[in-house]
Length: 300
Image 1 (cartoon, rainbow, N blue to C red):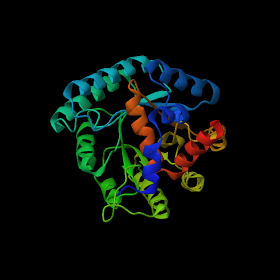
Image 2 (image 1 turned 135 degrees about the vertical axis):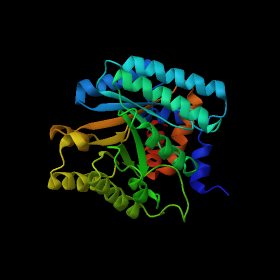
Image 3 (image 1 turned 45 degrees about the vertical axis):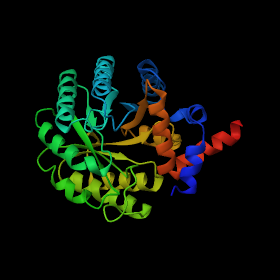
Image 4 (image 1 turned 90 degrees about the horizontal axis):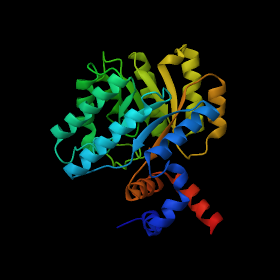
């Protein structure tokens, strides 16, 4: 049975979700995403990673259309040093055929390596975790620009760091938005935040590049304090957040201190994908749901 929150979020018409939650999506075209990325860099020295919305795709032709759009995105950011790219295995054909997905990921990794642009293989739900890490560990030695993601809500993640040994991995560490029950994941937000810091420290100890991806100010402050106390060079980490989440003061503080900050910029050429993304964000993140609902009331 759906919870009251699920009922409320799903009851909001898609047109309203699109209109009132639009700060979290760059727009419905590559051009709009590029405009947002360029504006952030010019005005605030904030870098970006571009993500074409879509996941759990089961149609081979739609997968190839997504790959082609990503390749066009890469060409558009080839001369934009402030941009990287993020992709999802579910969007690249995992649910069509894992080997098809791997081929598509390698095609994209090869193109990004040639262009000198970073590529992150995002982490999705737990049915894709092993595949994602296996592909990453296989491709990373061939394509040094490649990164991946670890989620602090999962009990397994500290052990997964060991799988990256010797790779000089590029890892985004986040709580993760995919709802995972026990016994696979902690249900405590406090523990998720504590785990994020533990994973970050273990990655640093392993010689990896770490993207500290959270909007929780105390966690950002703790991570920042630890990297400074440990003398971690600034070229071994960055801070990441999502487009639209209001953390301007924290971003400004980090940038003014010479830290690298990157915003995750989703965009879509199909608004159905964007609406699904926004609904999931609202369900998984009470803070975002509150922002969107307040926006609804304010504009009503």
